[in-house]
Image (cartoon, rainbow, N blue to C red; front, side, top):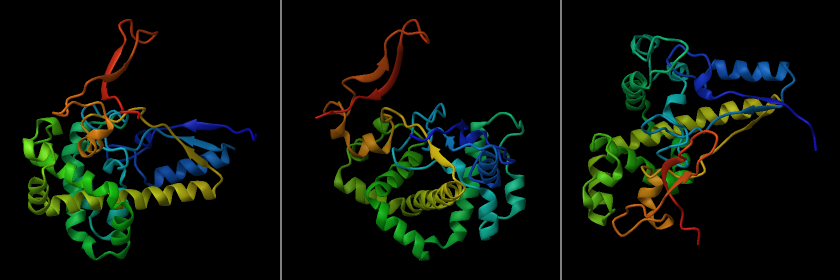
Length: 265
């Protein structure tokens, strides 16, 4: 076995003038620093889109990436945003902290503008990305679009027809929310394009990126909504049991995480 050392740094903690660390020049500078310092590993935290509480261990999807990590400067270079638009958006003023409320209110409108200017449906790379990832991305994009339509409510509180994925409801929302769905697909295409570029750069510098993933899937996720048969849910998709841990050094009464347990068989 080869010996190696590395540094743990969440993407969110990278320097950024837009409220949160992302796949920007700061990320590439950090890779260069790791190489110069003789480090082999960059350990990160989960990259999924975060739900309420903004924990990387409670994600809306097992497969999707967090749109907050999209580098806005790259979108400026692409010509789908202007630097003035980015600088005018309020994404928090304190350099050492992340204001997730302002991030939500300030970044998504910018990303929506970028999508509307992108002509993404004509992009050959996007079309190929959809062909390769549609097996999970179609459900995720619809999930996020419907969630927005229901004002962010968890899917367990949606109208029964779409909550239980009845055929006519699925067809209705796919048509009704077509552009909202495509917007979510655009975000994932852009995320993965930028993430792959950063990862490839790190690997060329001799730096390997390692990380952590949630042990359990979040209840309020595209995965639980699209595949309830994989989890211990009753006929109404209410969890029969949820994840947690017994009392330990961190909590005298234990912890109740709320994630549905798997049907292991």
